[in-house]
Image (cartoon, rainbow, N blue to C red; front, side, top):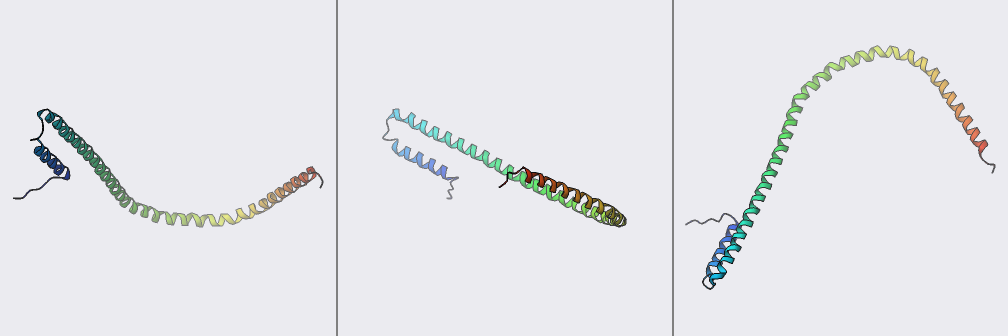
Amino acid sequence: MKFTLASPSTLALLMLVISHGTESASMVKRDVPAEIEKITKYLQDLSSMLTTTTAELVEKIKAADLTSQAEAYLQEGKAQVQPLLEKVQAQLKPLTANIDEKLKPLSGPILSQIQPLAASVEAQVEDLLRKVMDHTKALLPPQ
């Protein structure tokens, strides 16, 4: 004969019932309802605990499932976009090279025009800073 217990809580309940059964011979009739109430409360608490634990486990499983679905969706999207991205990059390479070739001849004359202007601005800023320093030194008390 094969006998299997469903869980440790079932074993505890069985032991409780056996111990109450052996003590029932010595119990007075008025103590029986109190003991039944205790057993009923224990079973209700156990049922409540199992219900909440089951609900928590279901929520955790759902959350894990949603995470794995999101990861799979992202991987699938990446796999679909990657070839398109490579195709766009391949098409843009000649375009950027062409723009680069057209702008190189223009950059020489522009730089030759900007360099004297930049030198002039630099000289003016240095003169301005020199004047500010001179005025600041004049405002300081002699030492």
